[in-house]
Length: 121
Length: 112
Image 1: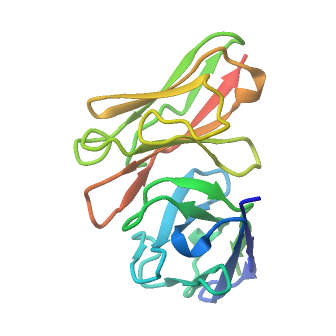
Image 2 (image 1 turned 135 degrees about the vertical axis):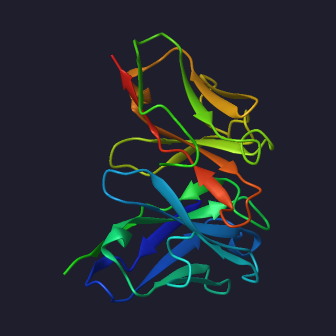
């Protein structure tokens, strides 16, 4: 079964850091690009980061550029999102998604169940 | 305000057909056949239902169809069922290299 499982969410104070992980199984992970998409409470979906299959190409949305860093370990079938300088507006459910784009985000055909991040003092 | 414009809500009765629009510009929806649609039930994970404007992934009901005219893409759901009640989002590639991909604000479908 194709599956993505996120972990690492939680409660953090403004200015703090958090690291998310996404474990992939059931498909050839190293052949696929991946993206992170988030959803603030009661709001719509927002793409925030893309990483190519090799990890050589990375893109970020304007709202997280310079604060978040995406990485992957193909040997461990894992995707990561390091989130620094967190703000209240980063509060959201964070989804990892398999991305059908090779060089930039395209469409997302497999989604994880999401992990909740709450930034509050 | 989202980059792609969707109606906030649409509604229909069981058995009817409804269409959800997604309006962009010539640098995204109008310029490329790279529009996808996602269904999200409340509290659930988004699900891909249409990609490349009008292609359905395996397992998605043929009651879902996509199209595009100019800068507006559309999702049509025919034979409306109670289980179709959900939020629907469109996504498009954009040639704006500072944005990469655009999401619509989402449309809540209510089955009356």
